[in-house]
Length: 186
Image (cartoon, one colour):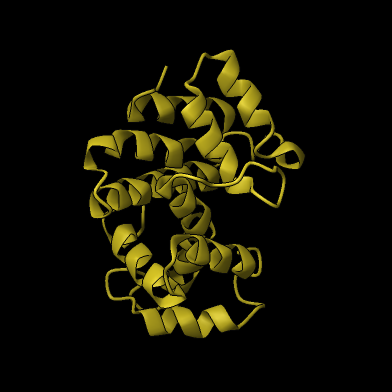
């Protein structure tokens, strides 16, 4: 079984109550949907979006079991193993040994942390928006390890490498993707 994006949001809300986690799930879902279209997987856009929505399903309640507990929760609901592998793979080399294999999994791995960093840069700007955000502004803050310290630069760089992209290309594309999300402020 593969949930629809609407069913995925309901499931996310079942295990997450905090606005931060709910918003993050919507943003990453929208970002993955954009990437599906951009990378030639438009016919799988709903699937990519669902993976993005559900990727942190377990994080709010079980942070110490992140990417492990969500596999159990999803299997108990009869969710397709492709989706379970995809959501769990974003914890590769952190909490699980499930490597991202499909381009979508690599995008999730790279963009998950990056969306948080880009969002943090955007709210520091006068416009508080990604609509006028430039790569150079993100790169400047990216170099400051104390800024958005919870966003792993190592994971972002490893993800860019997995995709065969430069860091600048990943940042640029993710900014473009975030501009399409209704969940992103501004």
